[in-house]
Length: 388
Image (cartoon, rainbow, N blue to C red; front, side, top):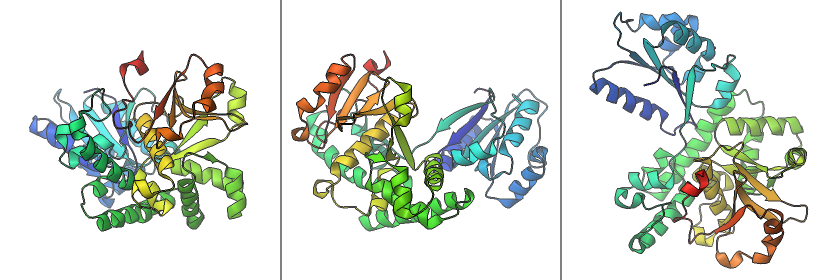
């Protein structure tokens, strides 16, 4: 294992603590020396805040050449996590290997005054994708066919029903592992209130009710242009407040913003972004809609959000994923790495070839593909051509 600090980040309740404990258990069974600290325990938190070297009040520092593996859960609770990690790393690596988690990169950005450049490896843990959802629903035998180059028709109907459920309730582990619809909705409500409120409190959000209203607005405008000025006017708040709250939502891994694609950087900076949720269940909670997919007016937007999540799992959301739109409202939903374009329609009957002639003529080097509810399960977002 590399000596750099392993930093695991992601939204609350995505399974970071469980993953750390699984790694801890695996290393212990292998005969390694490990220690696990949750900073929700005030004893550890107060000691580490007092001085980083107080860590050694709880673990012995071995004189041997063996590496000690130290797990620290919820590192963002420290007053100065960057100083703590930097001091321990600089003085004790590779004798001591740090594996830590943080619930929000907002707090990590805010509190990590030192970049820890060259000292850390960052891993992001999202909510479950559709494949993981199938695994936890005991469909391990068919999960590998999803988003692959071959999907046997034998499994298509089963997958369609399960996919419809996933689109409604998303991939939070607590949601996936309960069976009743009533319980799924209750868990999502808990996640959206209790855990989002934690983000709000720790980010010192001044107007929590406004923060929740903006989340509802974003949910209702999924895949559409997001206009902070319009939101600020409708809620009668300052534009900088809207921008700040959208920033916190991104850094708390609730939403992602997609920039426009233009080969003129100046033009690109002037254009509005599009917003998507990282979890579909959370999106539907804030949209106030858990209706079956075929009965929804927003089924196209919901499918488009799913496609965004697919790409976000495989590509850099700041640089690789963009959208294209003209002043005449000609639009392509996703441009990946400025090489491949994807338009998302719930049905292929909604796709009109003539609407995309201008794009094809302007960018003949970018291929355009249609993604629909009928073909999305078979679509492979990381096929080899995307990495050529």
